[in-house]
Length: 63
Ligand code: SF4
Image (cartoon, rainbow, N blue to C red; front, top):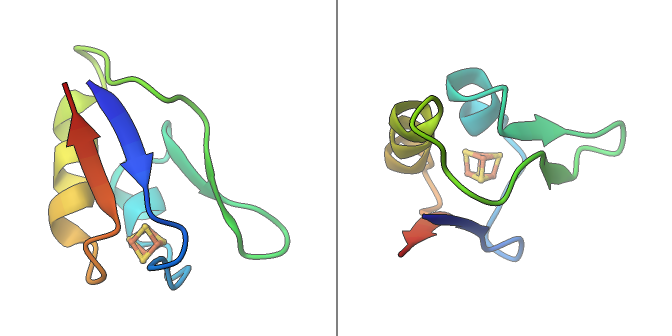
């Protein structure tokens, strides 16, 4: 699945990075960066947890 972030909604609170640091990372300017754009069998559970935890509902997954 493709990982999408609505950067207009993101408030850079780092919750997704805490849940899936292999995928999400806040850079030095507190902008969220995606390290990968697709889920893998290894990261998909973490990505889904991050999406559920995001208080801004900024993370979505597309087939
Ligand atoms: S959890 Fe949501 S609001 Fe927080 S940094 Fe990640 S995408 Fe942005």
